[in-house]
Length: 345
Image (cartoon, rainbow, N blue to C red; front, side):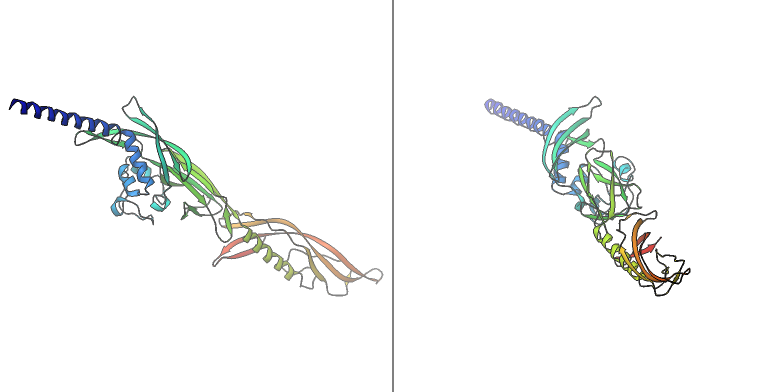
């Protein structure tokens, strides 16, 4: 009996030691501050936004507490913690289709701070590009009284203040969006870490893509996307300007009506003036003073005037044949169905 009691005591002791060992190991790995951060980044790596939001204690109104791909949501947002950041900008980029890919997660440093928090620095590949972030976390209790629970001190959210110059439409990580106003910074909330590829491509406009990196929680990143007229727009304006000037040249008067060129002649003309365009103005377009308008600045061109003239002084007839230089400028705006309105200034 005594031997059995000793045996049971030893077995119980071994079980207790094993349990304590498991708790210590789990609290230093899975339930450690670095394990908590790895769990969050792992959810991003799986493109599992609901899990990432739950781990980070970020609560978005909507189905299952997660934002949908159309950015829709309903209901109030807590104005503390993550909620205050969520209220700081648009949540249109908080959707699964806009997430960056996260791979090769490695914990670089795990540091205890004087205030009891811990800072975890992690490296990873973000959309195939090497990057790193530092997250500060704090103990928030325990599970079953033994496994540590953690919270982010600063929610893993970053504000991207994006200015879209000369347009409102843009694409961010494949998601088509419209800024509230042209040429005015607009805040967008994104998960940290994120790489946001921002660009614009349309029938008449283009932009050099920019990469916006959001790597530090609670910070603000500023970026500007500059939209310019593309080759298609310049070519179409050139065709229409050329056609307009050619039409002006068909008028058999010294000053074609509504046209940018003309020529006074002191003597009397004895035949119909014959105009032709010898130098078309090369089109270049810059942003106009009004939104969605583009301006062709005053540009040199030339028209040839050929007309027979009788001298008032001696009655002789001679041919006036000269190239008449002129300058022309236009304002271009957009119409429906990918059409342009071109107005002479």
